[in-house]
Length: 395
Image 1 (cartoon, rainbow, N blue to C red):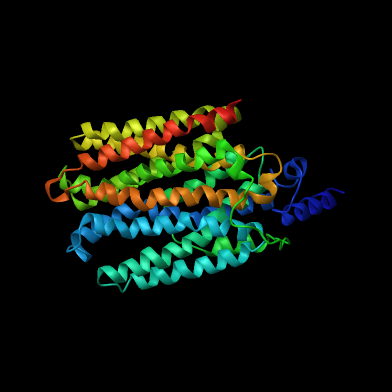
Image 2: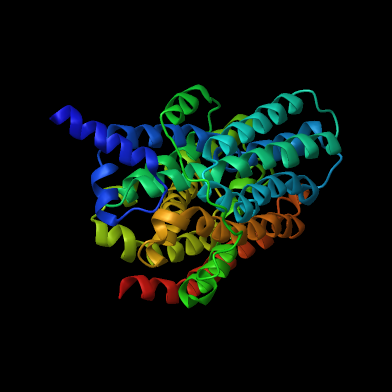
């Protein structure tokens, strides 16, 4: 009898993200071993999407000092921002494809693009080659992989969604490169739906809270990546540290982010879902502004750890907010489309945020005041825009 019940649970999980009641999701997914296998697979996929973007500060410093030293900081940052923009912008198109049941096709196609782009990057010698390999090829690949990796976990969990999303999000802080576990995990996941979906959920356009959330997320992403892109350059040109120390500081930031991304899942559910979000967004903006007062290595180490921690919490909660804003029944049938719409807005923020910061920066003189002010101001502006969606969820 126990084996029969387990088989029935596995079959129900295998049919997600088809329409299902909340009780079905609770029984079929939360705690089911196959659901946690999806978390493992998504964890490794996010390694190679957010993980690459989060590590771009190391690329930025290497390109500025060696491979692309004839290019400006702003021009080099376009490589990372185009990559990040494509990853999130493509969610508008990829989300409906996921909801239509083409999960495996997206994962496999995206993985091919990421691998080919990474291989091509190893033989690049000038700016346009790096831009095509990393900005476009890897960017397109991560765009195909990211939203499905998050959406499949969102549909598979309800009560434990915060900890599941937190574990998946934490992968970007590790930024390793592997696909084998992902393919093994996803092999057991079956999507039977082949219903055609529109690119945009028109019902969402009539929901004020969701429509405010999109520009809020966009504004947050204008500032979120600024420290991640410029921590190594700041350490070398402003604090005069060694190259090795600069990259260790970026790793330290990602280590703090790893802990931060897991924290919402460890907090009480009401606190993780509601109260922590405005605190995390406001705190992150203030921390970036406090970066203006950091002028020694010890203070900068503290900044890297604290920023990593708070920004990690922010990113996990930003993903959790989308299903919380959705009416009943949407998570099971159209979460991919809604996540795609929200990440489309975020992609625009990624696209413009760091290049503007780069234009406000003079790395040759160690002057990062413009970038620091821009990053902090946009994060606080995003936090202000989140007040209405937060109140909507809280009531």
